[in-house]
Image 1 (cartoon, rainbow, N blue to C red):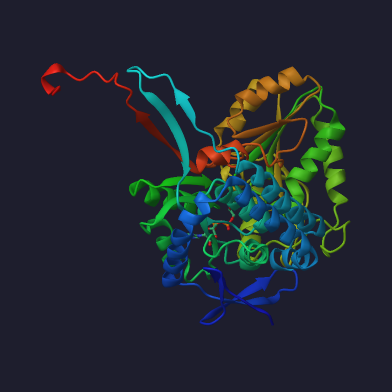
Image 2 (image 1 turned 90 degrees about the vertical axis):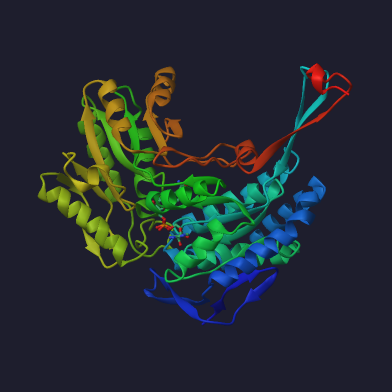
Length: 485
Ligand code: NAD
């Protein structure tokens, strides 16, 4: 079995204690991974700190060339990477291909960001030359989850590196290879100077000690966290106490509103993809559908029918998009949420069946606030349908949630759709599409308990640089007379 490990200061660490990385597809050990500890975390941070001066002072076009080479390297590893993403986290083949494509695209788009770090000149009250410059922050710790591991690790790190920071990336213990090793391999292949990009592969057992160093080490200037709301809040509060810049991208309970005039083909397709892509294990996954009661019966009938056609099982087949959930704990959580809802009076429209780590796409109706599934994040293939008489009711119900990542509105009246999108408390909202959508240049992020981070294009420049105001006196400074020599 292949052994993997951390990548620190341009060296692979393949000695020391290991942990087992399980595949939900083969349900056996997928890889043996060397477990990073607190001293590895410190070493990676020191390496990133030492590399910072050189990396941040490179001409933008040199950093750009390196990032383009990283993109090329990922592309050249595509066949191997596809298999890893499928086996390590149970991705459907279409999702694995998408992750590789989006990773390459993130690095190519970020390459152009190297030239977008701009300052400006201000008029001065006292005739000074008054200039605002923008500079990178320094070492950024990046912590990412397992569900879309390559995509999420590249979405964050590409922009952070483009603007001149250096990185220590800690992927999830469920995806150390897809979320870390692949990128480290690409950085090595691209010849990026040592220390600029470091990866720590660590187990669940070591994550608190490694995490503590990644957040509190004095040489870490900012933290980028993507993951659950609970862990994100605890990291943000620690970082806040130390006055470090922190960007957190957290959970979702995303909603779609379907108006009476909706094109039902758009509604059904958008809802099916957003509810069941990667078996619902997507932060922007659709969990709540609010449909006008006048068209509810037809929408529900078509949505249920389409859902029943989704193939479950062999994720290497294109017509089998529903793979396993990541682990036993996650399946039990979903199973219990559905049992709880059914026990309290919800109606099962389809699904509700478990087969090992596979959970069938599930649609529930008549869900009420006392059921766990009503407000808790599900992170699995379960969606609840509600009906409404007037759209204001639906908007209020959407906004009742403590989470607000993405949203969707389906209507042929796009002006109305835009106005409803503006009223939905979510960091992103798509008219005539599902909730799962992103573009490399668009600001990705949520509101409320879905986080405070923004990534993508100029949003990454804002989030991972800081301004410095510099003035040059030109003889116009007026001091109080008693101080003047
Ligand atoms: P998680 O919070 O359990 O883990 C996320 C990362 O944090 C992992 O790398 C994990 O090892 C690390 N971690 C855990 N405890 C830590 C600690 N004490 N110190 C430092 N790091 C620690 O989340 P998960 O189960 O991996 O991912 C699923 C969650 O992520 C869901 O809630 C989902 O909505 C969310 N998510 C959000 C986005 C987004 O962009 N908003 C994207 C994907 C997933």
